[in-house]
Every structure is written in structure tokens, then in C-alpha cells.
Length: 58
Image (cartoon, rainbow, N blue to C red):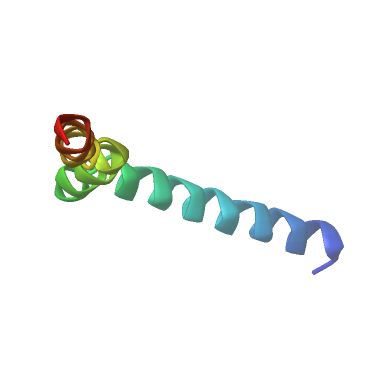
């Protein structure tokens, strides 16, 4: 077993890890959680709008 065999095995392991991460990222189990996380920056907009309206009314 020389260095080229080790590099080939390492490449194969990394490819399997990469495909596992892609499968996990696109699985139906995580889709809901990722959609919720994607909308987090917009979660405070309604609260922020109400606060601005209250301050403007004062």
C-alpha cells in the first residue's frame, strides 16, 4: 500500500461524507427546520413595525 492508495481511500471517504451531508441537507426531516431558520431575520419585522407605530403616535 503506497501513498496513492491512501489518497484514493481518503478521496472515497470524503466523497461519501459529502454525499451524506447533501442527503441530510435536502432530507424531508430537516426541511421544516431549515425553512424556519431561513425566515428568522423577518420574524421581528411585525414587532418592530408595531414599536415604530407606537413611538410615532406619542
